[in-house]
Length: 174
Image (tube, rainbow, N blue to C red; front, side, top):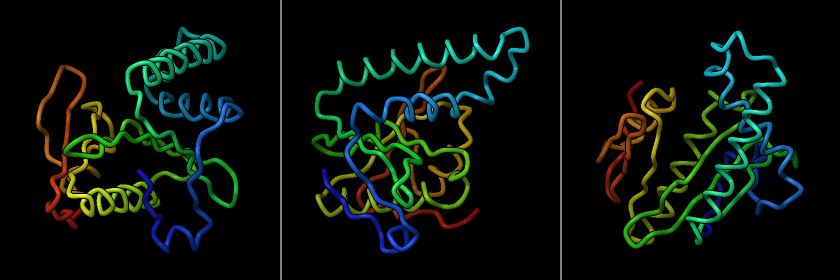
């Protein structure tokens, strides 16, 4: 599913492009950055142990996505031509599922994820679809998903499945 980035992101140098094999080192580093807080609690692990763990987990996640989500669209988020994130989506019958969205720490907390998700939700709505995502229950981005109108539809010990229906407006309160 193609969707256009909003002018505001384009004006700040953001673009999307298809992921390629040469992106793997960047993607490994991006993945590791999403696990930093969790792994910081493991004081008995060396830096090399943490890196090896992240590389193994990244490889397992990559294999899982490619083996179980055949219609996934893998995109790299660029800023001024440099990779700063990833956005993986799968178009389903009634929704566009966000398989994964992640930004490098230097690009988090600046509203970029919000704008990406709203643009994706608008594109999905134009096709008569909602938008869905699985999020870890302790993920700080959970607050963002609630503000954008996502509601939990199921949960496990670790994950919440959330969706935003076609006509659900974002909750613009902090």
